[in-house]
Amino acid sequence: MPFTEIHRRLGLSRNTVARWLYNRRAAHVKIDNRCPRCDRPPRTVDDPRAYAYLLGQYLGDGHLLTTQRVPLLTVTCDMRYPGLIHEVSHAIETCGARTAGYQERVGCISVRAHWNHWPCLFPQHGPGAKHLRKIVLADWQQEVVAAEPGRFLRGLFHSDGSRFANRVVRNGKSYTYPRYTFVNESTDIMLLCRRSLDVLEISWRMCRPNMLSVARREAVDRLDEFVGPKW
Image (tube, rainbow, N blue to C red; front, side):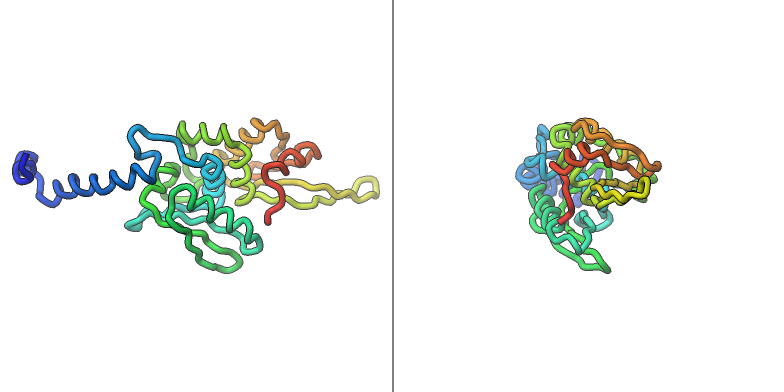
């Protein structure tokens, strides 16, 4: 059907019909090559390990800005851990972004990347702080986390967690042992962390509503297999 006849029958402007026709065609080429969720039928992510790690980082210290022309994903990292910055950058590029950029701030570096399809990979994005809204994983995200719970926990603990030497005094004697803590104000994100720890049979306890602790020796040794000290 001629282009003019299409917009006349629909009662729409030429610009609207042109945007529907030609923008979709251009997007379809990019979708097939880069976005697994927009493909038809949707496919799983190309690298589940990288995505599980990046999802943990996003839920911790990540932010998705969608008000710009091209959505911007930002993950804030501590400057003291260059290895962690490298790992976040690699995960971002592996998941679909062309390149990762950096913005230095006081004591930290923001790893940033523009990509039209970040909202497809992180449907949890939305206005306001994460702990003030519901955080629920999509079915396909749950499958990735179930397959890679260690990588997901690595992302969570690298963002809002820590591993440190805990010192206690009992009966006049001082003891030092390694301990993990994870702090997050979102009860939904805390629940996701606890579920992955349960899958790996790592014991934990809640110190307070926003803090989880892994302190038993065998539990710390097990979590070290997936997380370990920040680097």
